[in-house]
Image (cartoon, rainbow, N blue to C red):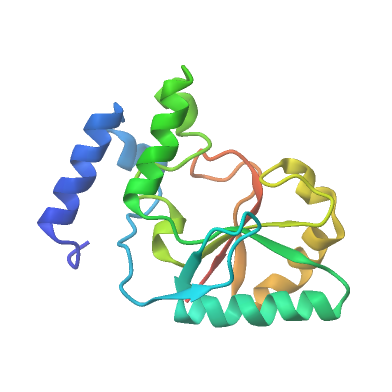
Length: 178
């Protein structure tokens, strides 16, 4: 973490305190700290027509992968890509406002600074006739295709069942590995 500025670390610490995230989170979750990249490029709007960004390399790999899937008769839908620290905070605040406990929230959403979405290389995907961000995605031909072909485009499934990070199984979450 030698390339991480003190101001960035201070911001992460403050965000965690504001959200009630325990100081032990970093060591307990085993997730790396992600610095927001400065080389993000626009990609197509997501399924909800929100603008999305990825790093240039992840964007090019995503375009190649989604085109290959289309050629194989599958439609990969982009649900989410880059998320900044503030967006991550907002997701957690919404769940806290709904009465959820921070320990439960951190099983489904990484704390600010620790989400792969901060890297600009992660994508949440779905496909036609499948609810977004649901485990049912694993039963689709698109998921089967990703399991066989995504690695060839540099993408890997980040949170398989029983992953070491304590994040619940997310068959929709794939990350481009540089």
